[in-house]
Length: 446
Image (cartoon, rainbow, N blue to C red; front, side):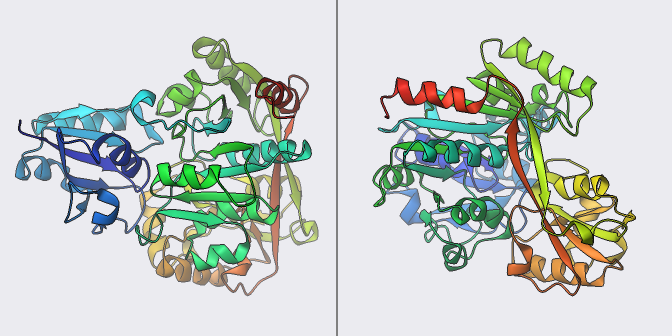
């Protein structure tokens, strides 16, 4: 029987997982290409033969997504599998229209086909959009379980932007591990807050191998915590599914793929940032939770902000550097740094755009909703250099670093800097402590 020709449409994450779990050893299909978008400079590579398996001795080429229509015709493609996240429904179906117009079927894979089953209890932490506060929720869950004497291994949603073979299975236990694995800023923002607290994090490309390594970690493992990313749903079958929502983007929980999937499958729905959102926006989000996930437990939480040196903000002209993905494909206009600047009485948040150089000029053009804040873009050495030069060009008194990792560790800044930290703090009951106590009892973890 003729194998069906398939293109997997992705962004260096869910696409590789979908291939590994559904297509790699499946003789009914022939994956002829991946396409890549969202993340700079991740096309032009190959998914290597060592990862692709025996059916793909030459590996699989990765092309830019803008070549999709031509590729479908040139490679006689039968089916295209949409495999990336944090995308508005209109944009998802825009890709579907391109695929159908070129003659191929358009496919979305679900939980049943792609989730891996662990022999350890699994808690998944996912979100309806990038930048909701999912990472601080993950940290709170890990810390709560650690206080009960349990060993928790966090497994992070993939960010394999470098050598895919070298990134097959990655283990991060110290800040030095971030350097040895050549992590991007985006990776460091996710891993550094964990390892600084003494938590172990796994990530990489092949999540069956990663899961096995996490379950058998040399320091022990009682619970696996899936630390999701980019509003994707979990790669592991969860025993407790937590989804975080953002009232700064009310309504997005029902308009983005696959964020609504995360909400509809949630056991616990957390409305974060209620301390900086309007009552009307919070109510919209709460109503939508009740509409599509009525059986989930609703928790409300504040994103508590602390600042290392508040004297560098009050009355000062400040440059605010925020988490890159939150501003770019997360479509936010502000972050924790902006909130800190407003609360502590900054004289002015300066416009970063006149000082931008190199790739950051292109970033501001592409994401024109970003105004007075600077996204911490750092997917490669050039972006890192451009970020450093842009910050040092800026005419300001001080720099607010609103990213989850310490930028001064990897770039040299010629101005006074202060970091903003943010942590999840539930308001009222129920809270995560109660939920996790029930989880521990249910799985006989005491």
